[in-house]
Image (cartoon, rainbow over all chains, first blue to last red; front, top):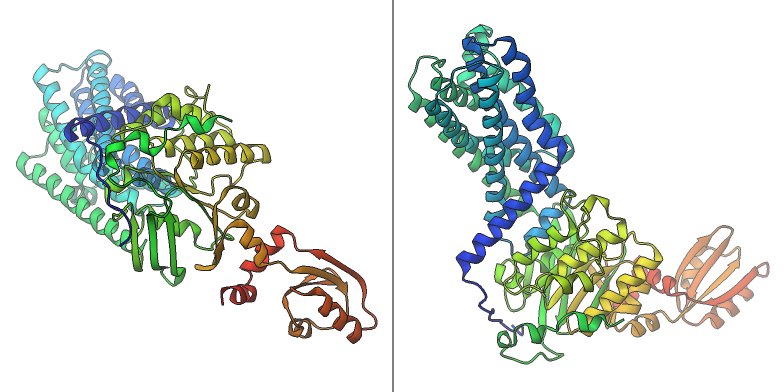
Length: 261
Length: 324
């Protein structure tokens, strides 16, 4: 081969450079998401608006506590599905992702930045709902409950980030919002984000344990004592299994499209 | 324009990185016997291309000729069905090779809610020895746009911003995929100046275009490509001379099939009621025409325009003639 090999100048040590890239990527992604009003207002706005309507209507009752957990789950799922699912689907469709791939950007930095931002949005949503719960909802919440809810929501964002990744790879960008709503709204309803699952039709209650959102809801509701009888470990296992399933499917789709590309 | 001084030559950026001095003959990138299929579609058919240090190569061809596929292969965005790709002595999928490469691709939309300066800042972070921000702004003519959101930019400004992103890593090798597509004449000329500045700074540039004029005025070497195959290759002057024939326009009763059998006729085209004939030696063709068809009228003979040369090169049978 006639081409010449090159040695690269040693600039910063790799880990520091890598951390810098990740920090910048995350910050840019944060700005982008926050400035994209369709996203930031609806993802934070819907749980807040719902709580203002239904939380205040049930002021002082246990349902006001229930809804803090339920709407937090709804918030995190929508932040992940719309943030990552739509984000990546759009950037893929418009060729932007290709330009980034052509640069030496570490691929993981792109994904990690997106996941961190979903976590940040989830935190904002939980914080907003906790404040609304105490003020508007008149709910009594302990610090321990608030911290446990935050932890469950953060950990619970991981399976939905994985699901969003698969959606981004499968769904064409222009059909994205419709399809994501089609997945996310029925799942929210059937998993008891909006009302206790015992009020739902019997057949729905039977289906619910097959949904990842159900297991997230049970973990969050358990903090306030609203969960169905059963062991928490089962729900964690279900979410972990779902995450692996989604990541595996995403990997399969990705390698197949790459082979065809 | 003093833009040549704006971009620091590769040799200044990292002198220690080049054990061998840059010479004009060194191959920096190469596609070797590449075949690329997308399902049943053949995008590149046994296509080879070599880029030598410091040259500006224009990959010229109509839409769907395989230009973008060639660029995407060189960037390691796709893998060839058959053949080998080497860039700076490495597989382009190797991210180390990417630190010395810049790319401007055809992009539908850029994340719009980020400012130009933020995009540049982010892309600079990807490279181990990036170009200073001020130099990128100057070289891409982005003064005053740093704080503008991408969504607020005009078409020409967007292309300049994308051009700026391609320069972030102070690359030695730059791929420009249709850099002037959709630009008005003035913005196109301004982009040409910027591309000339790159070549003056010693960068190796591969640009794709379907404007012959663009290839003619920028490139040191033109590779004409159509249907995934090289049609011909040479300096812009050589390409033009390749189709040195002239066009004969007339109204005649003679059939197209017959006209094609006349000596040196490379192509015929219908033009309303008349027929346009491209021929190497128009004199002998006209003599024959007048003899065969006494009713022939409206005769015009003119030199083939650059655009005609290009069309002749990339249309089916002319391509076969020239390539052989």
